[in-house]
Length: 246
Ligand code: NJP
Image (cartoon, rainbow, N blue to C red; front, side, top):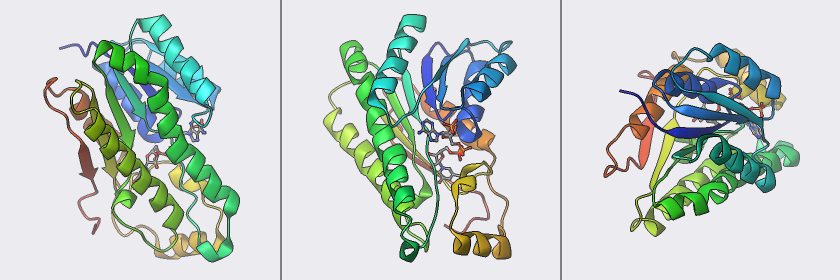
């Protein structure tokens, strides 16, 4: 069965977004890949060329509402509709609060929270006019917990959780759907944004005591959410490695 959907994926230049692009185009979805690294997007586009679904790319910074609106317009121009907005872009520069990495706090607020709001704002009118559409957001198990070093990251993901719950409540009389996917540890480049020496030292000393998920595992969850019947709204999925202890 071909997945006859148009899906915008933010943060598609690596990790979970890239894996979702692979999976969804294999299944026939047309995808619009967005991130700041345009060369990585073009490279991925060329790798996916033989998949069933079509791939187009657009350099987009999710913190810019204008760029997000242009991304949505580009998707509609190219494929005639947007079925799914996958708000996946994010960063996780964990740090101790005492080290006052204010720029990193602000950056997480801009990308992880405002980026998600911009994603919704960019497609809201289109989806409401069609009374059809699906907002999927990569949240985190950090939306359900706080650990030392995660205060601001967890705050951004708690905010994502509140936004997704608010959308679901407000839109319950429409046919729009809302899914927050909260992964545990996934092997991606996400930790590359960490600059706090204390956190890096701890990470190096402790290592990871269990095998993380692969991006492909999370891509399967995205596929599950988008392939449910129209009357089924999967609102929240928490998915962790089998040996991660919550
Ligand atoms: O990480 P990574 P993931 N505008 O670093 C993009 C959540 N999560 O796949 O712009 C647009 O490979 C960046 O692209 P570029 C996490 O919070 C993960 O793990 O070219 N895009 C890249 O494509 C995040 O929400 C884990 O630099 C921007 C992508 O974001 C999501 O998973 C656990 C951007 C990051 O890809 C995907 O992250 C968890 C901007 N301003 C939640 N800034 C995990 N990996 O363990 C960044 O609970 N990007």
